[in-house]
Structures are given as C-alpha cells and as structure tokens.
Amino acid sequence: MKKTTSLLLAALVAGSVFSTAAMADAKAGQKYYLKKLKACKKDGLKTGANFAAKNDRETWAALKEDGELIDAWKEVCPSGASKIDKMKPKDVENLYDFCWQYASDGDVPSCG
Image (cartoon, rainbow, N blue to C red; front, side):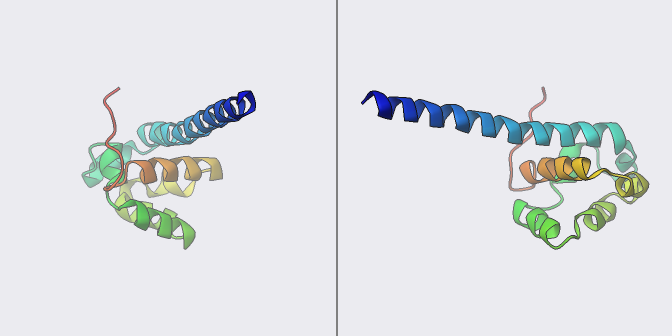
C-alpha cells in the first residue's frame, strides 16, 4: 500500500512539473510576441490572441510538421516578417507553443 501511494505521489509531482514546463514555453512565446511583433498591429492584429487564433491547433501542428510555420506567420503578419525571419530556434518553438495553446479552438488567454 505504501509503495502504491509513493508511486502515485511521484506520478502526480512529475505530471505537474511537465505541465508547468509546457506553460512556460507558451508564456515565453507570448512575451516574444509582445516584445518583438508589435508591428502586427498594422495588420489588424490587436493582440497576440488574435495572432494565435488565426488557425486551429490542428492547422498550427500541420504547418510546423510541414516546415511552413514561419511562412504562415509572415502571411498572418506581413509587417513583422523581418523580425520573424530573425527568430532563434528557441523563439520559434516558444511562439509555436503560444500559437498552439491559444489557437482558435484552444484556451482563452487570461488578462493577468
């Protein structure tokens, strides 16, 4: 019984650690959008949520898998194309996580 409880507790802790790490990437992507892609407002995107909601989760995943993610971002936000071209791989991953999490069929961003 004690062994089962220990395993259950370990699994619970591991699950919470992994979910926190996933959220951190989306948060970093949101920060990147707010800091580097302000030019997207010229394209009618008032917030990062509008940017992410241009596609659903399945479409964002397919674009990433096909290697067309950066082109899709430049299509959504032509004014930010120069910044998008200069993105580091880590930033691409974080912005993708943000787009996937807050896609049109994803979570609704909170105000805080």
